[in-house]
Length: 402
View (cartoon, rainbow, N blue to C red):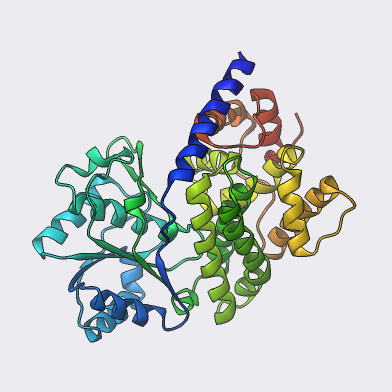
């Protein structure tokens, strides 16, 4: 039975690789630096945007940044309207409310402002503007038949990379079942990577979101769907993260480090949206479902453990990472070990724990089944894990041996 499941998974991954190879190579027009938002607003005006719906959350409104950006938009001859109802794990209620306001105000452009939740909501709202059906009918792969309105994005954290991806996740408001949207039309047209918007992020959020970006890059490189272009983006992201994350963590107002991390998250997003992810994300999603563990933190904890059990199947890509980071080893296996050690060293430097405090022994088997079911659906993992190996991996995160 295990052999048959491996065969089916391999076939699915070959189809996934074919699909990713057919994906258009369009990337957003990215403005980078302390003047990025002003440059974005100027370009939006030049391309015909006039009435812009800002999709964000109330927490960001309270910081005062939304008001400042609204004034900058007005200076660029753009008329802003605000939808600030997005919450973590956005639901169709949020999408419907934003869409109604877009239509009421006769907007022509959507600006996603914030983290992954605001990005996801904005993408689906934008898709619905050009497709008269209910947003729910756009769920799935390549369901956005007609072009959406102009969609632009300003991330305020350096982690999710949502500003560079073709996917969004929206939950049902009652059941909280997640619905996935995947379509190249969900990719923003333009983005502003403005480090000044990230200077006040707390160290813990800086650490978790930075490790989220690192996970995206590493899982993209070791994926069986990786290609030369995705590898270039992912390698660039890894270089930037190891150089800048400790600096951004220790001094949040280091604008150069914040700029580097914004670029890293963007590059990692460009990479993993074309390759997909792997076991790290599968376990992180499951930890989030069981314990409400923040996604970036869950990814960070799982990453070195997953690499340990997968390294024999992805020693080559890990050795390439080692070479770029200047890590020594006499062969690929030793270099792979050096990379895992470097990740653990980075985690200690930014005070990320190696184990999940909330994890319970009684949940290990169920967590493993759920995570493997997700990963084996279509994640291009380098090694196919069975239940026993999966449970051993999870127990390592528990800090106990089987």
